Amino acid sequence: MINKYILAFDQGTTSSRAILFDSKARVVGVAQKEFKQIYPKAGWVEHDPLEIWNTQVTVAKEILKKTNTKPEQIAAIGITNQRETTVVWDKNTGKPICNAIVWQCRRTADICSELNRKGFQKYIKENTGLIIDAYFSATKVKWILDNIEGAREKANRGELLFGTIDTWLIWNLTKGKLHITDYSNASRTMMYNIKKLQWDENILEELDIPYAMLPKVRQSSEVYGVTDRDIFDGVEIPIAGIAGDQQAALFGQACFEVGTAKNTYGTGCFLLMNTGENIVKTDNGLLTTIAWGINGKVEYALEGSIFMAGAIVQWLRDELQLIEDVKESEHLATKVEDNNGVYLVPAFVGLGAPYWDMYARGTIMGLTRGANKAHIVRAALEAIAYQTRDVLDTMQQDAKTELKFLKVDGGAVSNNFLMQFQSDILNVPVYRPKVTETTALGAAYLSGLAVGYWNNKKDIVNNWSIDRVFRPNIDEEVKQKLYKGWKRAVNRAMNWETERD
Ligand SMILES: Nc1ncnc2c1ncn2[C@@H]1O[C@H](COP(=O)(O)OP(=O)(O)O)[C@@H](O)[C@H]1O
Ligand SMILES: O=P(O)(O)OC[C@H](O)CO
Image 1 (cartoon, rainbow, N blue to C red):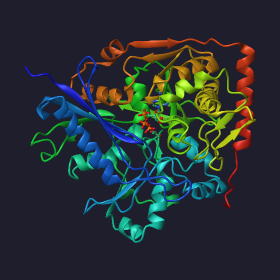
Image 2: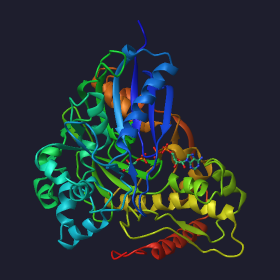
Image 3: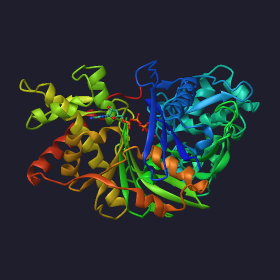
Image 4: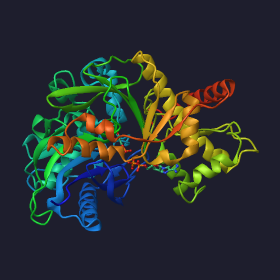
């Protein structure tokens, strides 16, 4: 019998990846392609949807070739994606009517301020679990309909479709047969009612978004359909799992028990805690989100979304050119004894949880003549850990629970300095698993469960194993002083831009 594998598509903010997993959840191979980040104006971020599709399908084909795998050896495809990023395309031509508006894009801040002024905060929080912010898809769709020529008329005639990246990929994989998303992605749009489990008519009406544009919401693990024959050498591969990347990582980290949590360190940082079938009320800057829908049951999570994490290190590399490679950041940070009073507040696209300040901007504070580039690099890494502490403190308070350990994953967890400092500043052990591709793994599990490749969650728990544990090892007084400095620095960064700007 030929070996069967699961193919995961991990469509992230900076790259498209295809990862092949075997039944022990081992990575058989990875193919990855970066794509263009488009910054048309300060605070705006776009992607070309066609480039996203092309890079994703190219890496999928590449990984099959690289590992000598035939399409018929793929038991199922699981899809995970950068969330909230909004694509609107013409149903008849299949062509996007403009670039995708990326989750980080701030162009709809004023639409959000208007919703705030009209007093929609409570309704949005109670029904979508979210905080009104340019981060989520709803105002991005409104912006497209209001600003792209002819869009509103076409939408009213039922000719336009909206989708997050999962929806866009599946539409293309099935040549327009499926226009679907899953609960976890729908819950990030700010127009999905997470209590009633349906698109929210009141929000759609307020933003003037036609219902006909919206995808059908499905479970995160079920066979939705098959890939078009033209894509993988005449073979139809089942598409059987969908989840937003952060929820997929929660699944891949086997955080199935209520109160277990993971933090993913990629472009941003996303800390999610499983709250089971309960919607935990939070008024302190966290989000309530759908973790996944599986076997007819929907489970929820609390989320702290941090917009800039690993991306700060890329900025040090690409814009300041302080380092040549992101890996160098660890060496530089450990070359100095401490941050020398330097704080970097990475509010480049505003601040997410728990501050939610669309008008905050990046700052470097506490510079003196003694500050050198190693201090700035260290401050950048420390900022990732401080932001995580801000979120975790709030989460423990809201969920009325104390975390015993934090599971971590994502590109930046290879940085040992960052992981140790994270444990120090949280005062919680940090568990780094052997497979840190947990986002892709989560999508693989969701699809594998749907086709019987894996039997149940127990298989997943058994596959999870630790690479290294980082334990708190810092003087209490030093820790407190450091964190206090961070809080002061954040204060200075907040509200830098104003609505008028
Ligand atoms: N050794 C490292 N130290 C610090 N940051 C790192 C390191 N390796 C990778 N990163 C950061 O991790 C991010 C990439 O992680 P990844 O999980 O691939 O992100 P995404 O899915 O958001 O594209 C980049 O922002 C990069 O700067
Ligand atoms: O592409 P990532 O991994 O940074 O994830 C982006 C998030 O899904 C945004 O909500």
